[in-house]
Length: 426
Ligand code: EPU
Picture 1 (tube, rainbow, N blue to C red):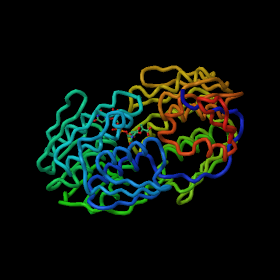
Picture 2 (picture 1 turned 90 degrees about the horizontal axis):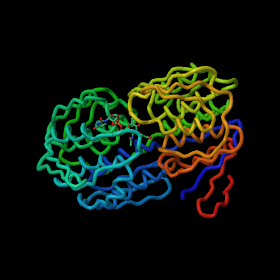
Picture 3 (picture 1 turned 90 degrees about the vertical axis):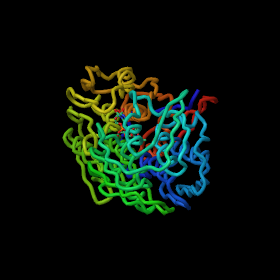
Picture 4 (picture 1 turned 45 degrees about the vertical axis):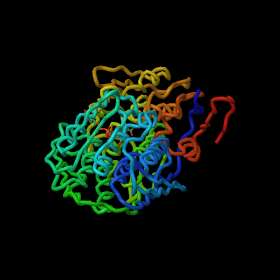
């Protein structure tokens, strides 16, 4: 049994919240750090189960990792690339993104195949094809990847789809390859841009990160650096959706509004008032929102990670919304649970047809993955009565102090420890 959240719905959320570092940037940087001889200091690192798992993997690969508050100090001077345990590797998808940088440093890697949220097949074929172009020989034997490369060499790589993970993995690996690598149809997610800044801080020569064509001039050696992890646009977006679903008024601080453009445009289309400054965004809602159409797209389109929380908001909007998921084939774990709370959602192909209802009713629901969990918490905030969200270990992957932050905005939410059945009211 895992802990649960108990939410008494109906409170209007209002106030301001500081957003900590981005999970997905931190995870990418914590692969890139493997390239560096010497000590790297990362600031504003989010304390999440995924980043904890990644730190554990770094230690298993021989790095020295010191974690104090939100500062991580990592020394990758000596590495062993065949020593990670399968359970930790399988707990996160980005364990696989360590393969390339480990190979660049050690020439030989053994790595169990990865895991992550169950939202689709999530193959790694683009990664494998790209790494092979860079000169790696990779085989999968008994669930373990065996990779070798005497010397990685720059290559021209075209991605069939602008995969965030493949772009990050290949640009990181290419940083230590001999010669020039060009990645075409690269992902343009802000986390890719941030990774480019980080690699360059280590001494790499990456150009174009954040555009669809990235050029990497390989260098023979990289050193440690200091780096600040920028704010998490998905945590920020989730709180803004909390304002939307409770007809509240929330300001997120420490963010880059240009990272939220698609979400903010869709919220204003639905009737929210959005204002922004250079590092903050405020969403105010006074009336019931109106139905809209949403289609997930690679950045700068509407982010798939906000699809499930946005669907919870649209479940109580006025009219019928259409939400099309184009990135993952199975990111629909929230729908059945929202329907148990009284939502009217049916799935047609890859589109959720959401007939807005006036009110949801609290009941006991289960998070199937990280963003489904966030969607159910949002739904609980707006539902009549008590909602219990189970399997909140999924939520701990990506939301730091979720319960405390929502409570500080006026939510009635508490964490119910699994064993005692007792409540820890915030
Ligand atoms: N894909 C392939 N082959 C590959 C790689 C990807 O077919 O080799 C497909 C995937 O199956 C998916 C699509 O390409 O259908 C996009 O996947 P992408 O590689 O962009 O996703 P990712 O790198 O695995 C990251 C985030 C996800 C986020 C996506 C999309 C991390 C750790 N994860 O995943 O975040 O949804 O990009 O932006 O950076 C989350 O935080 O909840 C989360 C799942």
